[in-house]
Structure formats: C-alpha cells, structure tokens
Amino acid sequence: MQTIQPKAPQLSPDRATIIRTLAPVYFYFLVAGTATVMLGPLLPQLMEHWHIQDAQAGTLFTADFVGQLCGAWIAARNLRASLVYGSILAAAGCLALLPLGFGAAHIALFCIGVGLGTGLTAGNILAGTTLPSARARLLVILNVAWGVGAIACPLLISLTVAGGMRRFFIVMTALLLTASLLSFAIPRAIPSNDAPGPSELAGRRQALTKSPWPLPLLPLLVFCTAMFLYVGVENSLGGWLPSYALRSSASLHASTIALYFWAAELFGRLLVAALMTVLSERVLYRFSLALLLITEGLLCSIAHPSAVGVITLTILGGFTLAPVFPLLVSFMLARTGTHKRLGPLFASASLGGAVLPWLTGLCSTYLHGLRDGLLVPAAGAALLLLLSGTTTAKNLLPPPTGS
Image (cartoon, rainbow, N blue to C red; front, side, top):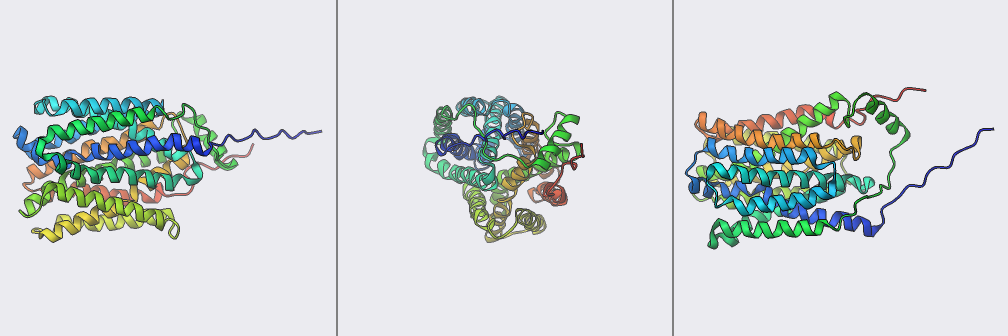
C-alpha cells in the first residue's frame, strides 16, 4: 500500500520579520538614490574644479559604475553583509573624494561604486524574495524610495552649497553610516512564504542540472543585456541632461534639471503602483519603452530646443523610464528566486552604467555636440524594446519532461 508523505510546512515570515528586513533596505535605497545620481548635478562644479572636458568627465561615471559592477558580482553571497559593509565603503569613498585630484578621485568613486553595487543588489533581492506574492509592488515601492533619494540629491546640494561640495559629502557620509547601522537589524535568514508551482520547480531543476547559473543561456544573456541597457540609459540621461540643459539655455540650472528628471521618475513609479491594478506588467513595460524611445528621438532631433522644451523632454524621459527597472527585476526574480549566482546579472546593470555614460561623453566630444552624444542612450532604449518580447515572456524555462 502506497503511503502519502505529508508536506513539509512552509515557513512564512511574520510581520515583524518583514519589517525588520525591508525597513533598513528602504532607508538604504533612500540614501543610495542620492549617492547614485550625485555626479549629474555635481558634474559642472567638478569639471570646473578639475578643469576637465566632456570625454574626461565621462570617465568619472565609468569609475563609479565599474565599482558597482564589482560590488554587484559578489552581493548575492551574503545579502545582509552586503548592505552593512557596502554602506561603510561608500561612506569612506564620499569622505575621500573631494580632497583628491582628478586622477585619484577615480579610486574614491570606484569605492563608492563597490559599496553601492553590493547594497543595491542585495536590497533588490531581499525586496523581491521576502514576500514573493507581492514581489512587483515591493520592488516598485523600493524604487520609489530610491527615487525620493535621487530627488533629494539636487535639493541637498542646494542646501549645502554655501559650504561648498565638502559639506555635501560630509552629509552623505553620515547618512551612509546610518544606513549601515540600521542594516544590522536584518535577520540572517529569512523564510519565504510562497513556494513555486510543480511545473516551475521541475523546469528550474532541469535547467540547473545543466548549468550552475540561475537561468538557461538564452534568457540569461537577454536579461544581462536588458539590465546593462536600462542602467546605462538611465545614467546617461540622468548624468548628462543637466549639462545638456546648461548648453541649450542660459536660464536653466543643472540642479533644477536633475530635480525635474528624478522627480518625474519618482512620480512615474508612484503611478505604476496604481496602474498595475488595471494594466498587465508586460503591457506597461512595453508601452513605457515605446514612449521612452519617442522622447529620446525628440532629444536627438531638435537642434535648438527652448528652455521649456528641454524641461518637458527631461520630465518625459524620467517619467517613461520609471516602470522599466522594477518590472524588469520582477520578471527576472520570478524565474530565478534567491539564486546564489544572481550577482553577474546585477553586475551587468552596473557595467551599463559604466559604459553608456562614458560613450555619451565620448561621442559628444568627437561629434562636437552633446545632442549627438545622446544618440547612445536612444540606441539603448531601442534595443530594450527589441528585447522586450523575451524579457516579458511568461515561461522562459524549458517545459519539464515526464519521468
């Protein structure tokens, strides 16, 4: 007679555990939003401080995001430690940045990048796997927290401008150290309350027997490319639009344009949380990319935009970017879970943040105009739209075989 084995009980995180896990992550993302985007509004001052040109300034973004690549690569091994020690490393980089010359500043930016890469990757994984039934919403809200920090960056620069850039970096150091202390509250092990279905389990088992990676080769490459392109596009626009605005109209200010961009992205993410109740995630993802491509096409094609035109396109750029990253991460984590080798997937995002802003500055210098340089993020948006058929597919894993 065949006996039926009882199911092992699912461990479910209680409310206190969820709060202990996610509250420090959300605070960290608030601070990390400011630290991630600070180069954009600070760039005109830094270029004047070091007497550098666009092509040289682009290497500052590269140093920062190469550091993020390295940090993201190792973050998935220990999520709690990645937040604790990543915050400390980023704080040290902020404290050391300004006294250094242009060349040595790349080392400080690399350290900031490593700290941000470990923390942002760990935070995304924690938010996307602590409560899988609410994965997409938690990731959207997490990115809202990041957006609030990004908006706060130009405001914080304006408030501290009387004391120069040094005062801004001291404040950032204090905030990052606070985030590190709060991250000690995160539990070392977090049970998950949602189990994958039988077909999903079978598909994952089949895929993982062939490769130690979290996804089969084709979807792995597609998601790596999409993450690379998104962060590259976002940081190219967020980093270079303030400088583009200054050159387009003398009445505009870099910090104001940065504020418009990140405020639009924040508002877009708040709206996404509501739109997800009436639109499917896949439709929302593709529609946002199509609007982003149109916006970037206008940025590159209008030769002499007015101040109002620059502000409008800046707002549209931030607004259309808003849903893309949280939805992309949600699509990915739905297939991978908390796999220990998620680091390279998030590292590809940091690589995009290193390469595309640098290419934008390079094209601007050698094509004699930042409008031409913005063709780089426009091409990235077009490729993201082309890849959306695969990234939004419901089932990327091979169907389970019968036993």
